[in-house]
Image 1 (cartoon, rainbow, N blue to C red):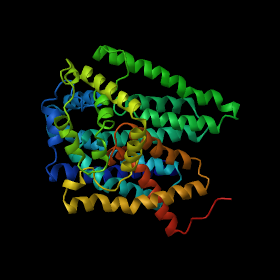
Image 2 (cartoon, one colour; image 1 turned 180 degrees about the vertical axis):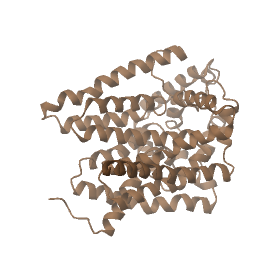
Image 3 (cartoon, rainbow, N blue to C red; image 1 turned 180 degrees about the horizontal axis):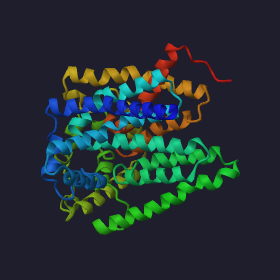
Image 4 (cartoon, rainbow, N blue to C red; image 1 turned 120 degrees about the horizontal axis):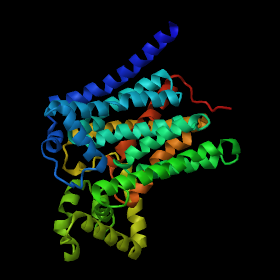
Length: 401
């Protein structure tokens, strides 16, 4: 009976974590009349829309079928998936041995973070990716916690397979974490077979992903976004310094091709895929011919990843800028202190937690980045900051002997 009560309480706790995140997102989406972003793909999804990731395009069709023509139900499905970051954060905190106060602060943080709330209104696709990335971090740490069980390795690779169709750059983050795990356990031959399981499974799911992409798109390649070349070129061109030094990113992206017309060979490309490939080649050529400029703008883009100002801060109201910037200015220093505490206490996941953010920032700095790209892993900073606050209150900041 005691086990049943404990299990019931645990499930109620996860339900509470979900509702704490779900309710504010629902209020933002409906009361603020912000369901326009859902209505466009619901009513008429343009074929081969380069802004829609392959996984989200499939999910849109599934959710539309399950909605029976109701935009409200369709939106609620999205918000339910957005709200899953709550129980995922709870599970992560339990896995990382964050105390109850730190766990509650973490859940409230991901529930009420202004940028996360806004994703429920104007970027439903990114809101889904936040939950997916949270699930990825949890499954990775769950696998790495105890002897690298093969069943958890299979679950981890399944999550990576799904992410591959939404945000393929997360595979780079996994590669860095996996390399770190292999390096720190290279002397333990007993666990080597279990450690290698994800590598074989990842090769398998990569082959499956290429096959699926070939069946549906007729291309034997990974299901990378159809605008990867465009993003690479937008972040690596002779005028990119105007983007990294100003706070009008949307205007920069919208007006770039008007202000700087592309050669006819690219502008008149027959298909979007062909045009994207030509842009990718142009960007790579620019990088090879201007290595010092590339290093400079990569460093500037890396700093932009950690910026506290909105991407379009120059054209936003003072109130909106304050609502988004002030929370980050509060929790970012606390997150650094939280990482420091975890490392000082020899927490086994201290380095991987820091590595998630750094690797993600470094990789995106080579392409194009801004604070909105950081948001998919912002929950890591919130958990670290919450741990710091809880430790300061309890005066538990001493080093583990």
